[in-house]
Amino acid sequence: MYCMDFAYDKEKLSDYGMMLCNFNHSNSLETLSSGADITFHQISAGRNPRFPLYASTYDTAYTASFQICKNPCLNTSGTPWLSPWEVSALQKWLCRKNRYHRFKIDQEDYQTLYWKSVFSAKQVMMNGKIAGMELTMYTDSPYAYRDEATLEFECRANEPFSVYSLSDEEGCLYPWVEITCREMETDDSRTDTFLLELSNTLDQKTTQIKGCRKGEILTLDGEHFTISSSEKSHVSLARDFNYYFPRIINTYENNKNDFTLNRDCTLLLRYSPVCRIGL
Image 1: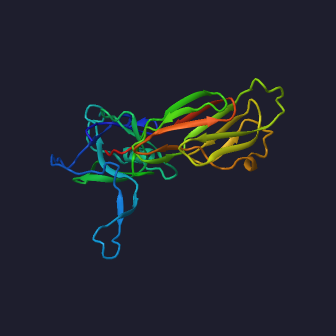
Image 2 (image 1 turned 45 degrees about the horizontal axis):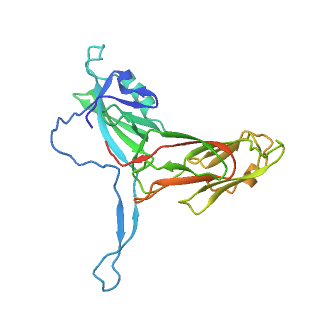
Image 3 (image 1 turned 30 degrees about the vertical axis):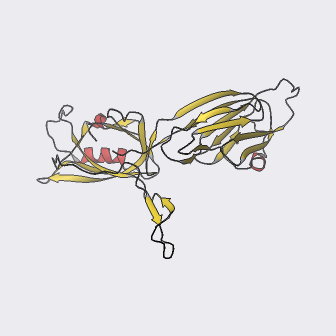
């Protein structure tokens, strides 16, 4: 990568007076992972000299290493060396163990990409002093993500609406979905409950939630596989849901997902498309 700054969990490297650097001063070419490190599993069938492809996997999540040092343009201390207190502050920010945070680099064409990451760190020593740090980034997936896409639809009962997958990766993604059940012209009572169904023509299953009411807001979190309701009276939600979360499906030939709801609803959908790219 060719940049000086990055952001991690809403703070920037430059906020700490630091910049990205390379202590090796090497201009040689290097080969880096680009988020497509796929392992292909092949096997020969008897005397057949061909090796059919029977499976493919990502064996590891994406990792990357880079170095940081003081930015001379931001350095007010008069010394290029890092103090123990500065190292401590940097590691408190970067080296957290509990969960992933968003990492974005300040580089042209990368502004809409991010990684969910955690860091480990080592000190770079020079003549017994701390010249900088070497960071190793560990992510939650083999690839990067594009900034979250947000779509809103005013859905009429049984009328399809389309969602196009923007991911590089074939397969499916589980989005965050919020469904607000609206009143239909034929409805005359808020006390009536009904079955809500969300279908996708590319899928083989239907999301079903029983016991829904007009005005109820249902939230389906596809990342954490949880469901919640704005109606406290919907105490049987865990039994009423068939636990099939909506999916956005992507194939090489087709990325169009035609969804249908069986009721008039407002639907809000959010997801982060996959991008096969490295640092």
